[in-house]
Length: 198
Image 1 (tube, helix red, strand yellow):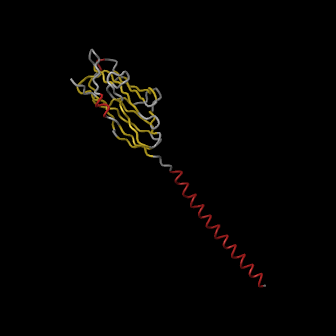
Image 2 (cartoon, rainbow, N blue to C red):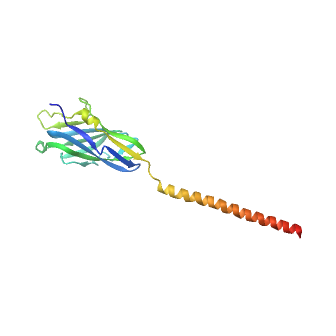
Image 3 (cartoon, helix red, strand yellow):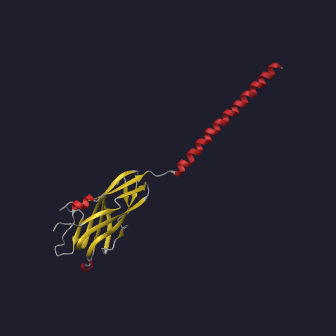
């Protein structure tokens, strides 16, 4: 039977601003197969995104597994693992595995991707509750499910609100100074002419 199990992101497109935290759901689909454990390998651009986890679990688990946790393997590589310690708790897993959070570091466009390469040691897996602990993931389908993150430049409200009044005040002061200088000049000129005629 062809493997049909896979992972996907929800939403597939996220729009946020620099400095803001956003969340993404990791969805899994095992069809009719009961699942005992799962490994999720996610690639991201560490110059643009920072996962909100410091080794301790900072993710929101779904309802399929007794234990769900995450850690950073290296900059740009996030690992989520989920397991049922009791095989009797294993069941089909069609829905949310976990919710993860990232902080947007700078403006631009980037992607979240699943790492899934058959027979590779560190790869995404969906393991069934059978005597062979079979990995039923479909890597082709899983790799096709990426998520695009659009990060807008932050609005520097304070900078925008203080710069414009400053410029207006500066221009206004220059105009007043020019008028004042003109008045003094004409008064001085009239006074000079009056003294000459006296």
